[in-house]
Amino acid sequence: MDFLNAKSAPSREDRLHASIAFGGTCAQVRTCGRAMANGCTNLSARAFTMAQGCQFTLSLGILNSIRNAVVIMHGPLGCGICVTGNLGLNKTFKRLRDPNAEGLQWLTSNLDEADVIGGGEKKLREAVIYADREFRPESIIVAISCVPALIGDDVDSILDDLQKETAAVLVPIHCEGFKTKLMATAYDAVYHGILKKYIRYPDRKLPVWEDDSYRVREKYRISRNVNILNVGSMSRADEVEFRRILEGLGLNVTFIPCYAEPEDFQYALETSLNVSLCGTHDDYFVEHLKTKYNIPFVVDTIPIGRKNTDKWLRRVAAHFGLEREAENLIQAENKALEEALEPFRKNLAGKRVYLAGGEVRILATAEICQDLGMEVVGFKAHHYDRFVEPIFEALESIDDVQFSVATNQPFEMTNIVKRLKPDILITHVGGNNIAARHGLPLLPLFGPIYNYCGYSGVFEVSRRLNAKIRNYQFNKRISLNSPLPFKQDWYEKDPFSYIKSVPIIDESAAVQQN
Image (tube, rainbow, N blue to C red):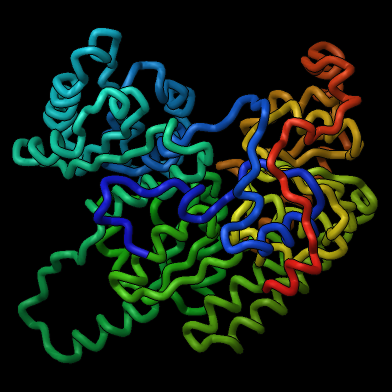
């Protein structure tokens, strides 16, 4: 896989044949995903769609976290203005990694109607020069929205020309929202820019007393290095947990891309292993580093839940020949968790739970729910691709559990929740404004201030689930005073009635074809 000669990354519809529309069961979606080389769910679409995601705003979630960088949103003022709601939080999260870090520094080229006719290149040039002279950042990142792409602004050529006049490294990110219906393409768009502009071996100045012993020590140090590819939904507490686990095996840990500095990506090449926490997030990046720099990677699991964390730790340890140490650590951690989870099982056993959000994360979180004796009654994934398949292995008796694929589409989820009647919802943060109106206890699927990952994450999720079940008066009040906005006749329809082009699945034929 090598797309770096192209100006931008391909869409995930083309590269991974991912799906954004499906309604059925877990068994059906798995069979359908394997039935054809291109994935038969890739053909699915909707006759009606509501509140779909945008890769431009999702790209900003990563870009805004990079330290010592200025982000220029090239487009109208409204594109990406949602980041203003995260200004304080972003500064706080950066300082958890570096006490001297600046807050979020962003500009917009503020294109208007006249620029749509005459072009926005002049405004972009002015914004880049201003950012370089005013903030003196290590890097200036230009996130390209739909308008400049549609009117034909040659952003790459402009930045190549301006690079001679600026001290900062200029990075174009082609994340135009209209290019894909699958907003996770944003991860590829961001990594495409990072790979082209940031990734190179560091220019180290070796000490004058360098000798063979120094080279040996450096080689040993690099052989123990691990890059953990974090995600924007991961908290500092999650990072602390990963560091605790892997340093317990004698490994050195570096976190990229979120909250890293541009320079960190150079030193990221001095590693023995790249460890992805989510294949949906990182496969584009780790595949390129494997191809170009021969750095191996782990990409097929996410350490949320005990089984998934055990599997993740064994995969990492096996690369370094530390299997025995890993088994001792796994045994000790699971023993401690067994005792800690017992009080929560008494309250949560038998409770019905519905999970909605990123496909890898909802399946991994469901493993915690099953560990507590809860009944998983349904999933709603943002999309479906091959990175979901390994996560199913940690779950039990879910073939007949409902599985839908929808990026947002709250009208479908509302219908499904009315039918399944769960006792608690675990949902993506962006959908909680509608989900809360069901009057049910609600746990966000992730939160940048909470611990969800690793062994300590199992305990924290269990503790918070228990608290939500015991008291959810706030959501009850919301449901009484802010009813759901859908008519009664919608609840009488099949929730998947607007999905079209879904093929009938012949499981026996799929097995023979495989």
